[in-house]
Length: 420
Ligand code: C6P
Image (cartoon, rainbow, N blue to C red; front, side, top):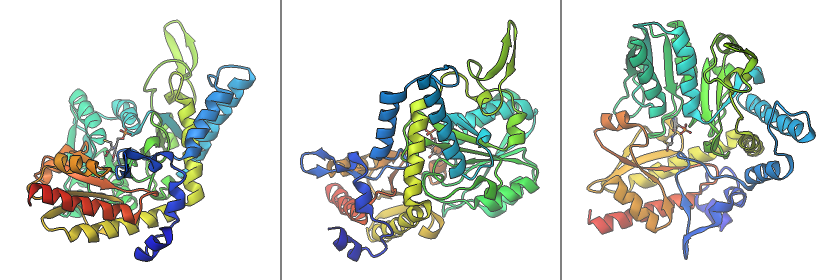
């Protein structure tokens, strides 16, 4: 089967069938005789056995609280947690592991910047620049702050093609924003924004930059020093790691000058009645017992991705998205949202004329195909496209070309059922 598929789809860049054996859930049937076709990795990725086993081994052999106990288990658990931080640091090319703060997810990382950097650095009337393609996680924290501090918010426009409008970006930068927060890759249309150029322009205009890497860090190489980005936020669960762990990277001088976000254990150097002295980086931002097993799992996920190679993963997904667009374009009455394959990652949102996105998803589920339908937590972008919802298929390193064929076949069944 593997050879036959490789012949049929010569763009196969990695041994996807071998990779699939690493992911226990991919072997399951969702109903008797109906194998799972998981096309919802943008929502969350599946986990390889090595990640599940690393967390299992942590609980079976080492479990203890960290940075506190002077006993073997506590020392081992602390070392494992800090080793995970080191792996994250290397994965994104940060200068120091002190710049890696563990959070619960991308959402919490962005909120940390909003409440710590934003509340301490912004002043009434300051401008925050976002884009029309942001996930709610990179909109709502800023709206909350704007309400509280009387800030102004502008958004870089998205074109009909689903990319950011360069002229509008220049116009809005000329308004002098204090912060430019934007997504590296859209979770709806898959557009990959030219982050390095945009960050350089934003810096020239005097803005601090925050990059939402929820959809980029899992899929291609992201190097924070090369990008010169001030803050980067991402989630472990979208990159083969567990839920409950995310990362905020920040430039040292910015993080040093930011007050703690949450107060509690571990984030202090000293507490007296009525006062406290915050701990050093990164602990200043990690109040309370953190997600230790999850950090260990994230470390194992990074080992797994590194073993395969981010460039190979990216190449595989490029092949998949080119093929998916080609195949989907054959389907009459199917509207694809977003740009052509060269400008995007492995995400395709679409609609079939006369059929609601939820109906598409429900019928595909009958064929074992898991996609997402709805606004994908990006309501403003859907408003821009003047649709309430889209159906979204998304790919990762374990997605096969054959699965895309199954998706297309099932879409033809949707059309049959609706008579469109
Ligand atoms: N998008 C999706 O199905 P959290 O939930 O904090 O791990 O990630 C939030 C987030 C932030 N930015 C982008 C670009 C994202 O895609 C997401 C999560 C998922 O599209 C779940 S809504």
